[in-house]
Length: 130
Image 1 (cartoon, helix red, strand yellow):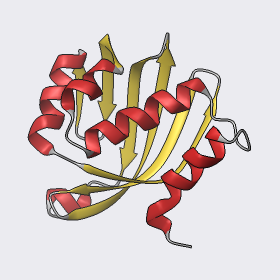
Image 2 (cartoon, one colour):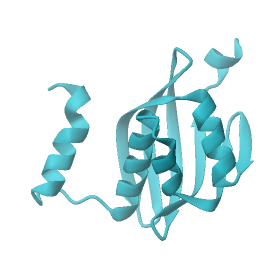
Image 3 (cartoon, one colour):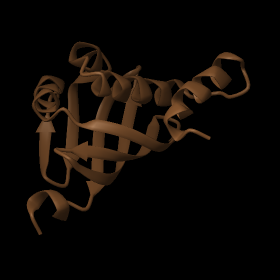
């Protein structure tokens, strides 16, 4: 199986009714798809204005500030697994951060079809030079 076609396989299964994806999970996957395509306007659409980001290397409050950071960093996300439980969506992904592939876990809180918060965890040593 070609792992790069997983999203298209999943989306086809969803369209055919063989697989159900929660609305919250769909919001997060569409958000990540927009970031991968560097469509920051669409990505911003999926964020609540008062969105909060907490990560290993920083804290941000506000969707516009977060999107501005993403515009500068231009990360690429390879989704390995995504699952949801109510308003919570967890995504395990490899993120290309300036040429380094970093295995990361992201915990998204989605309310009213908008991402309210994101917490990420990863080992920062490869990108901080240790």
